[in-house]
Structure formats: C-alpha cells, structure tokens
Length: 477
Image (cartoon, rainbow, N blue to C red; front, side, top):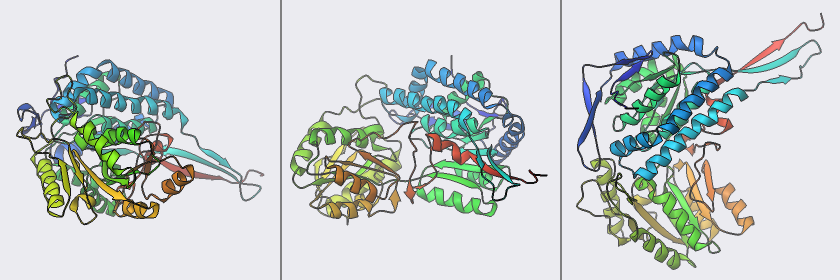
C-alpha cells in the first residue's frame, strides 16, 4: 500500500485545504512533504461529523466495534515497516525505535479491541426492599485528541483506541511537526472499515486555533492532550466554561535512583534505556540521576563507557542509535541547560556539541546540584545529569522536589526499602529495577503538574465512559 494522502479526513472524505504547510526531515532539514493546513472551519466540520456519527457508532455492539479495531490492528502490523519509515523520516528517531513504536502503538489497538467487550456495570443492593439499583457505563460522545511529535504513532493509538472501543467518536489533531504518521494511520483506519465520521483528522500548523475550537464547541465532551504543562493548563482553563472532561499527560522530571545495594550493571542498562531512547525526547525519560556515594564512581564510569558506544546518524541508516533532535528550539534549550550547569560548577564529562545541524552527542554531567536549571526543568534531550547522595530520606526529598509527578525509577535489593521508597515517591509511575515501564496493559499517567487521567490498561476505558445510576422502584407492587 502506498501512503499518499496529505490532507484532512472529515466524515469519511479526504478534504484538501487552500493552504498547505511543510513537513521537514530533522536530520537533513529537507522538506519532505506539504500537508493541508486546516483552520477553525475544518475543525468545526469534523466535530459536527463526529457528533452525527456518534449516534450510530455508540449503538454498535461491543463485538462489532472490537472486530473493526482488530482489523485496524492487523493492518498496522502488516504495514509496520512502511509506517516506521514514515515515522523516522518526519521525526528522526532510529528506524529500529520507530518500528518498535509502531508495534507498541498497535498493541493498544489490540488491547482495547478486547476491552470493548469488558465494559461492565453493577447491580447494587437497594436501600429499601422495593428498590433495585443498577449501574451502566455509556460512551461520552465526541472526543478531541491532541497528540505530540515525539511519539507520533503510539500517542495516537493510545488515545483513540480506548475512545473508539468505548463507543466514542474522534477528532484528531496531530503535531504539525509529524502529521504524516497520523495520516497513514487514518488511511489504514479507513481501510479497516470505520464508518464515516467516526475518525476525523485535522492536520494544522495552528494548534492554538484548533484548540480553541475543541474547547469551545459544545459537542466535544472530552479532550485528551499530551504535551507541555503550559499548554495543558491553557486547555483546562478554556474548557472550564463547559466543564469538559479532560485527560492531560504533561511534562515530567523523572528521578532515577541507584541505591548502594543495587546491581550497578543492571542500573546502567536501565538508565541507558530510559535516558537515551528517542534522544531523550520522552516525557518519562530519566531527568535526574541520583547515585549513592558508595557506587557513584563505578556507576559513572560504566555509564560513560556505554554512552561512548552510541552511534549518531540518520535514523534510516543501519546501526544508528541516536538521531537528531526535533528542532532548533530543542537544541537551544539543551545548550542553555548545559551552560548553566557548567557555570554553577557541574563537570561536563562528555560534551554534547556537534557540527551536524540538529544532532547532539549524548552528554554526561556530574557534580550536579539542585540550584541548576537542569534539576528543575525537563531536559528533553540526550543529557545524563548525575547527583551523589548519602541517605534514603535525602534522596526521596530531592526526587520529590519538583512540581512534576509522571515517572520515576530506582534500583535496589532491600525489599523493605523498595516498599518504602515506592510509596514515598510522588509520581504516577514507578519503575523498580527497570528503566522500561511502558505497556498497553499498564495505566500510564501522572500526578501533580504532570496531569491526570490514565491511558492503557483496564483503567484506560474509564476516561471515555459516563457512569449512569438507575434506581428501580415499585418492585414489590
């Protein structure tokens, strides 16, 4: 199958716009495509189409919705290599990572195709002998999904698969930096047999404009957003007048703690997996590495050796481990954080500078402290910042010293300590002796200013359903 569409998809039709925007390969800086630049009128048409389609789609049996979702899942696997190539070309991550993302994204479709058939209600004993109480769950309605550029395939399926499984309809606004993966997925969805209007796609270089339509249109019952905390707060404020339901997966500042009794080699491997996947441009990426003084030197030495083995290059070239950062703004932020850390006394063990456009070498920074910007800001790049600590309570306090609460990690062998630390960390997700916590079967989401709502797992359906309580009287008459 050739993926040639470059336009919006509204009510089962591919809709061209008068204005186009460019999509650029971050490795070569070359324009690879132009895409329809949708406006508020397109967004309104898509929402209206989704609202009309909801009347039919919500009445489909769970089994019928499940079968269409499974077909979409199978098509994603069948075309996984092509989807991965599209992803690498527009986003930059190595092909092997892109292929892993496509398959990971497809796993959400498979999972929620099954969960569609498991939306259970309850029968509750009544408070009087002549009463019976039942509880059912019903789909919310139209869902607006806004997805980011760092995982342009998986973040789409993680949001819209549970919504579709629950019986909701979708209007999708992908990142303007990576719209091609979204368009390809919607092409496959069309082939899978979703009825017109169930899935609508609005590519646009004007996210604020589209966001205003989503938050103001009364037919939109829920907004699911992955992105910055700043934008998440804007969407929440704009949605307040209509009390829309929201799921917000926002920024992170993940601690990675290595205790004295940890298996250092395993901790290094876990740190590499968490820190340098997608060039560190991941919301759950390790941001602050706290290492106990007894194993600090061994950990730093081993980590430095592993970092030196990473190969930079074009994501489509075999053997590439590190691709480009997404744009100049991301590079500038990384350079600023490193300069601030150096000026405040940090030791730059390996420098990030290159002369290859948006490429940056993985950097190792030691002697970091909490006064540096790198401690409080989400790095979102290939920089491993290492802190030394002595006591458990000290490191827990440092780990929690952030407004974010998405992911956290730690390595250790004392099971009493493991329980204490896991419970004390103020984060929605905790990786214990692992740097890889993402799975379709687990609830993904944060606390504090990292947002609310969960994606994946059996809990992932809840945010797309309303609970209705029915009180049956007159049973004895």
